[in-house]
Image (tube, rainbow over all chains, first blue to last red; front, side, top):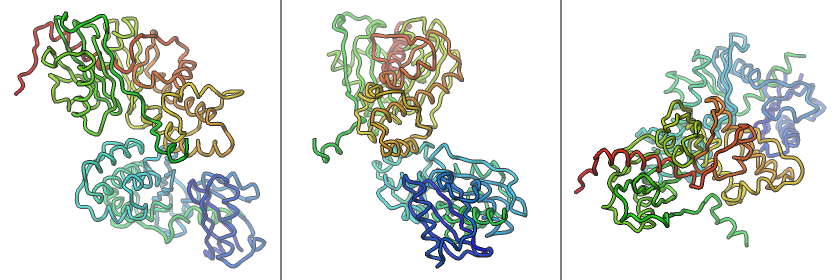
Length: 257
Length: 300
């Protein structure tokens, strides 16, 4: 049985093709402003990578902030349910999961079956999401990919006063003017963002094992500083963590059949 | 105007100014005092002669608080055409108040804004809303301009002057024209943009423009969201008449007219620049101390 899961996020739309509980294809496109189009395109990419046709797919499950845009989907899955199921799928021992994307972040406490016990969401503020690092990377004139490794090279902690992305950007500009090392600025940026994410996770409780999905989990700086802030040895992250929610959407859809 | 030139314009930039009261001269004054308000975005210096405003300046804060205070002071002195050693007492206030090297002491901006609003709007004021560059304050005060209660949001740029600067830049509309242009749309007033966060409101605005909204409609939707955001704070504190607004945002009718529809009170009027309230309050406190015989610190 083949199920497609599509996660329409603020920045990227991701598709995962699941065959009898195994991932056989993935596809990713920029979301842009036409959400329906993005979901179609991501699905086509996923189908192409799996080497199958649209007719081969039994059901389509959708999640993410833009999930309403696909009228033909069979199942709408909440972001929380998708993330919980994905965490359980990749790491059955997980009890806390965080999903941090471009514009939203969420954390949940889950039980041994992957059911949600408690959750918190941040969808109002850019300070605890990927956009924060992206904006600061622009100010520092480095790519987003360079940000994490740069931060890890720093050995100096500089506290940032600002929480808000807008104010933090001015603060970063002041630090640049003061000739502060880019590595230290990058670390300060990561510390600021991580403290927002961690305070969100703490509200559901840090229960081992902690799983992280979403695009921000690709940032090695963020992962390293999160481990420190959460005081955990290990943060469990699947390969290509940005596909996590799409996997979860497919799994929930499969269960509902 | 070609595109390259258009791109280089700084839409957020507002005009710096200084002013002197033509009917007053420093030579006639008993006590001359100065209040300096170093905010995150703008800095003001108010020179008072015997408790009346003689001159003031309003400038942009640069990266360094001390220099910004110096610049504001020099610009006000220039307007007053007065030597600096004539100053009897000087008080710093605002976000950068501890970094005003020539101030004799500092007082928090909430205290100074209430006192200044009491002066520029008159003693009937009971609620002062200050919308500055990086925070929003709602202040209740008594008949003497003394603070009785206040609330402040300084964590988030939504509804602040800095947020408006970012937005005016994005829209390519000069910050001084945003207010008027936000009323130049056809038909019904658009709903407020749904995002509180300035970062998200930016992407939402771009989406609306792509959907075919006019610049004016988007400005209206954004000003309305800012008004709602500001209202949520003042509402928490409670609104006692008379109601006055200080800070740079007081000059943006796109936000203010929409805010007043929610507040359902009249907004007090003043002949003074509402941005100088903090510095005026500081100068008044300096005047009171001067009359008690306090003098300037010795300087080497």
